Image 1 (spheres, rainbow, N blue to C red):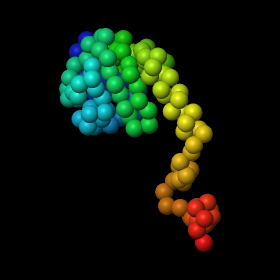
Image 2: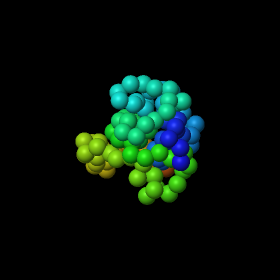
Image 3: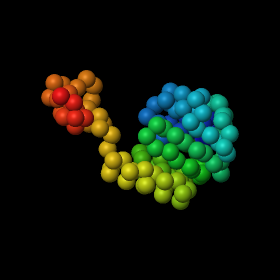
Image 4: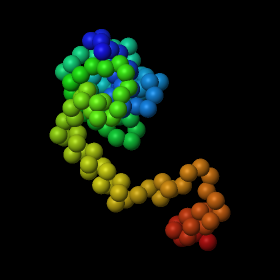
Length: 127
């Protein structure tokens, strides 16, 4: 483990993103902020940095507790950061909202079948 780790590599090692290129793209597009500021993927992290991370499905506010440049098991990766209480509450509320109010097309993968199209038409009140 090194003390100078790029933010995109740390995000991948901490298992916020499935690939390092997805982490790099998120940092480039401003979905990852350090102390509220947009940064570049090559920025080095320090212990104690406050991160805002939006991976598309969830949003986290975390404090960096450890450094690692290798992707390990999830329990080990969780030791690299600590999530704020407000962030935990926000993610739980969003999860409950998704559970109660499902997106109509969330269960369909790819192009709908004839049966799927008929079910959607029935729900919409068409035909």
